[in-house]
Amino acid sequence: MGGVRGGVLGGAMALLLLAGCALWPGGGEPASTPGPGQPAPDFTLPALDGTPRRLGDLHGRPVLLNFFATWCVPCRVELPEFERAAERYRDRGLVVLLVDVQEEPEAVAAFVRDLGLRSPVVLDRTGEVAARYRVQGLPSSFFVGRDGLIRVARLGVMDRTLLERGLARILD
Image (cartoon, rainbow, N blue to C red):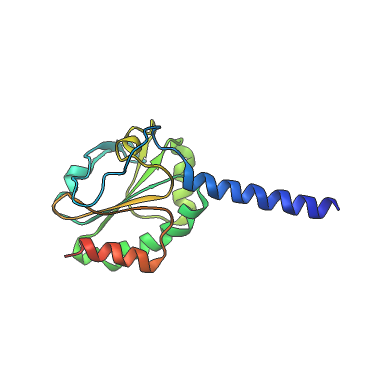
């Protein structure tokens, strides 16, 4: 009987974790996410090595901006596909910029090593940038065109088909 109860409890905990990724409140502000046709809010955040990275410096290049956390299981699922896309579309100027939300640099560095991520990772330690983007759950992704305008905003995990649809909107 204990084995069944433990299995049910474990399954329930996994579902709660997944729901937490989808429902995590990114700044407490009710409201809509900056959407298609709107400028991507500029920001400067430290990379894992402490070097400041500014989104505005990428103007003129297509950017896949992704908000994630190490505890988010769906994030762990989609990030390797983002890495493959970055490699596939490197010659078209694609930049995948990963924004970790409210975690310690050491935990993020270990996560990045574990997954073998090569895309730039910046740290939103306070959650301020996530709040400016009105991130309501993780993962959240924004496809930003060369002109700095958001073309697609998406909450939740993306499979390759959804990813390619978003990339088609910015790889003009």
